[in-house]
Amino acid sequence: MTSILPHIVLDRGTAPTHSIIWLHGLGADGGDFVEVAEMINLPLAMRYIFPHAPKMPVTINGGFIMPSWYDIADIDIGAKQDAAGIHASQLEIEKFIAQEKARGVAEENIFLAGFSQGGAIALHTGLRHPARLGGILALSTYLPLADTLSQEVSLSAKNTPIFFAHGRHDPVVPYELGKQSAEKLKQHGFQTDWHEYAMPHSVNNDEIGDIEKWLTQRLV
Image (cartoon, one colour):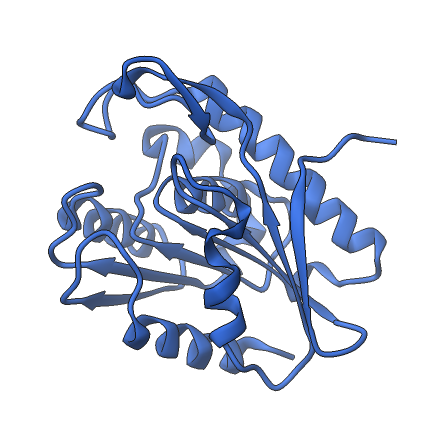
């Protein structure tokens, strides 16, 4: 049996027919967004899965070992990207998608969500997944390895809707980097919805409300 990362499972409703795989940010863990998921009220039963990122040395933090989806080498997060680490995490998230498919959840009912570094992996994985997913929630994040997207993108992913959310005062993932990422995908024909808020590198109640509305519109 293929090993899968440790994770938290939260079922909202009985016999869920839809799943959201939700990835935390650098230095956090799978429990970081459980409370947010509990605040979202949807019309159908939903299974939330919160993987714990593996622990590794992070260059920008002096090599300190912490939960991380990939290494970050520079304060300019768009430079010196850890392609090997990003691809490794992509494979781990694909295992969760396969697990949900094996449970009987259709791929178009599987969503990827992520905050910051986790959002980067959600985008990277969802845009390369060979089938259309239910959607991608990209929160306070950016598009990693943007230069290779055109060679690696899945044509089916062009039909996967993407919810972008970003704080205008984000000191960690610059607002402009997030905005440029959304615009790049839109120019390449992806279905993107942009939402911005007067907040730093965080999530607020307005954003949670918008996530709830967006998901509700896409549950079938």
